[in-house]
Each structure stands twice: as structure tokens, then as C-alpha cells.
Length: 236
Length: 398
Image (cartoon, rainbow over all chains, first blue to last red; front, top):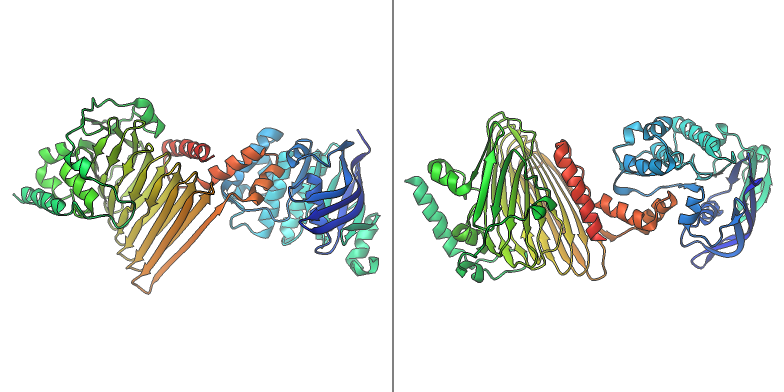
């Protein structure tokens, strides 16, 4: 198994005519809980969506390697089939699709039991509800993490798991993220946050700071706490 | 006799309305159907077509009609009576005249007039007082030969009774026909009627069902209507009248294929206090189809009502129009509506692909989700028919 799960070299990405990621380099090694921090608009979600191959995110330069394979030009379907997964910051509402419908499709592929996933994320009461309709912020995040638990990815990319979430839900979400690390054969995960509330429950091994589309610094856990105390301004 | 006078009056009024167009839908020339001799139908049921629209031909209570020549009916369910409408009139003329053409005016338009003058068959279903019938009562109206099929259906669910009536209407391929089903439903006090109607026509068929439902105090009417295949023109506007504490839930799923012209609506009048109505419609427009979705709730008593119309555009040549309407005639009324039309959302497709769906599977799941409407407290057997129909609709929509 390669020591580096995900490596990104000199990546520049545009959305329409706007360049959102500029010459970005990042490595996610094995056994690493990597936090990607940055203020709003820094390019965090863009980076995650580019890694998973979302349409509309155009790679101008650079290479993305996942498990030593160059996936830069591969479609999202392929990357997901290889074990990458994205927990969305704001999942869309899916009219007429119940949570149980989605989880059952994912569990058929991933070999999980819906009830176990639902119990883990405490979403049993939402299973027969339309996906996303009338959910609280916390419920939405718990359901989203549940979809990843059902997918059992080799590497999870988690976008803002702590935004708009009550304290009780954060604990449950963190429990789900730990489970995702457990499921990962690399024991790694990428968590994007701008508040870092989730770090109280799942500690980082590495923290990287993203500003204006570029990684300006990576360090150990201490860097995250420094940002928490002083904000991003002092790092520029 | 009062009944003879009534049926004479019905015919007289109908004769005067033969040139009266419907306010909605494309106008169909009914003169060929009025003067046409009875078609030389052999009255053979295509069982595969019946099954296609979900009709269980082994049901314990059922009614089958082919064209206007073959009729078969039975009921082995205690508390459920099934008759052909003419047999009901022949056997109990004085009772029949209290129900037939009482809710639907034969002079409503030229289609009701045509049905009153030339219609044959249709079912009379009575669910006796207090009977709770779990097994769906099945009806199949099949057109094998073309021409006119105008059955007159009466359903009476007496006080405290409960039943599900499932009607599948279908036609042989390439057969030119006009179907005008007249339906008058009476839901008694604290009674519940679930009515499921599945239509599968062909590209040359014209369809003009006319339905009025009367729901007594504390009663409930739940309707689920699906048009699942091609049709030339279809126009219908079922109307429900609710007494005090009565409830109505009407769902319709409309698939527009080819150059079909669909104008489908429903109206609910909440006459009594504490009534409620929910009208939900979904339109999926493919090819060059045109779909109009109408819905109107009139709150006369203190009541609640909601309309939800959504359209999914699956072609550049199709069109969808929603016309929701709310009328309050009482200050203690809470009526709302929401309507939206759009195409398949890229965001939703991409989301599902990010979860491991192929793009085709993602589109299929979204279309199927769009076409599924949750109907509470529906028997499992009916639920499984509906689920299979929703699957067929989503496949045809793509």
C-alpha cells in the first residue's frame, strides 16, 4: 500500500472564467486526519470537488494522484468507484427520494446494513422522510455522513461537517468521521472546516491552511489551535 | 314514476347539451361517436393490457368491461356489492335514480351529454355500512375495437365503511376511440374511499372522464390518478365536495409522450367546517407533449388546504403550465399553494454520481423520485401496484 494516499501537484482550477485554485500542492499520507482550514471563499470546497472530479471544475494545470494513479482526467464516476467519496457541505433536496432509498442503494454496493448506519448516526427517525426536506442543519449533516458510511470509501473528503450544527449533532458527526477513518484502509481522512468546532471531538494529525486558492502552510495539530486563537490574518 | 321522469329528464337535458364544449381541453368532434352504429367488437379482453395497468384479474371483487359489449362482474367479499350499472337500474330503479346523474350534470358539456345518450356499462359498487374492506375492488375498462366507450360508475361507501377501488383503463394499440367515463362517488359519514385510477391509452385515443365525489361528515376521499402512456388528448377535472370534518387527498401523475395534449385538474369545495384538502400533481413532459395542471380549492367552511404542482421538463419541445387557484369564502381558512417547473437538476444528478451512481442511474432515480407521491395508509397490495407503475413511468419518461 502506498504511503501517500492522495497527492496533488501544482494544481490550478477554474470555474467558468474564475481561477479558484492556484498552483496548489497537497499530500495526504496514511494514518492522517488532515484538516484543511481557510476562511470563506478560500477555495476549500472547490478543491474537494476538483479532487472527486465534479463537472464544471476545470483543471488548468497540475496532477491529482489517488493511490498512485493519475486520476486528473478521470470522470467522477470512476474516481468514486476507486474509493474516493465526498460529504457535501449542503446536499441538495431530492424530491421523492427517501433517505432509506438512497442508503439501501449504497448499502447494496458497500455491503452494509441500513439499520446499523442509521443507528450510528441516529437518523432512524429520518429514514422514511424525503431526502433533505425539512431537515435541521444537524440532521442534514448526520444523513450526509451516513451516506459515506454506507459507501465505505477508501478516502473520505468531508466538507464543513460542523457548519450549522448543534453541539449534540457535532458529537454524532465526529463519531461518524472516526468510523470513516476506521473503514479507510489508509486510516486517513480529509476534513474541511472554517470554524474547526469539529476538532474538539476528532483531533487533527496535520493541519493545512488554504488562502486565496493556495495552500500557504501545513503543520501539526498546533497550527489548528493557533488559527482558532488568532484567526487566519496572522498567518499571511 | 319519479325514476322514469328523472331518466327522461336526463336524456332531454343531455340532448340539449350536445354542442356544448368543455371549458378546458382540446375540443373533440363527437359527431362520429354519436351517429356511429355499435362497433362490431367481439368483446375480447387482452389480459396482458389489463395487467399492464395493474388490474388483478383474480380479485375477489371486480368489474370488467370491454368496449360497450362485454361485461363481467362478481363480488365474493362480504359487505361489497358489484353490479353493472344497467343491472342496478333494472333491479332497483327507484334506488338508482337517487344516485345516477345526481352529482355529474348530464348537461355539463357535450361529453357528459354523449355519455348520457350513448353510454353503456360502468360499475355500481356499494360497500355496506361499517364494512372495512382491505382487498382492493378491481375494475378494468378496456377498449378493443374503438369508437365510444362511456361507462357510468357509481361507488357508494356507506357510513363507517372503508374500501379501495382500483380502476385500470386501457386500449388496444392503434384503435381510435373516445372514452368518457362518468363517475359519481358517495362517501358516507366517517367512511373512507381510496380510489386509484391508472390510464394507459394509445396515441390516437381521446379521453374525457367526468368525476364528482361527495364526502359526508368525517369522511375521507383519497385519489391517486396516473396517466402512464401515450394519448392523443386527455381532459379531466374531478370535483370533490367535503362536508364537516371531511378530508380529501388527490394525487395525479401525468406523463406526456409524443404530441399528447393533457389538461388535468381537480377541484375541492370544502363546504363544512374543519375540512381539509391536499392536491398534489406531478407532470413529466417528454417529446412535444403539452400538459396543463389545474388545481383549485374553495374554502367555504373553516378549513385548511394545500396545492402542490410540480412539472419536470424532459424535452425542448414540450410545455407545462400550472394553474393553481385558491378561493376563501370564510375568514377561518388557511389555503396555500406551491408550484414549480424545471428540468432535471444537474446538482442532484452530480450529487448522486458523487455517491456512486452512474449518470443514467442517477437520472432514473431522480425521475422516479419525482413521479412518486407518498400516499399514507394505503394497503400494501395497492402500494406495490403503484410502485411498479411509478417504475414504468420513470422508464418511459427517459
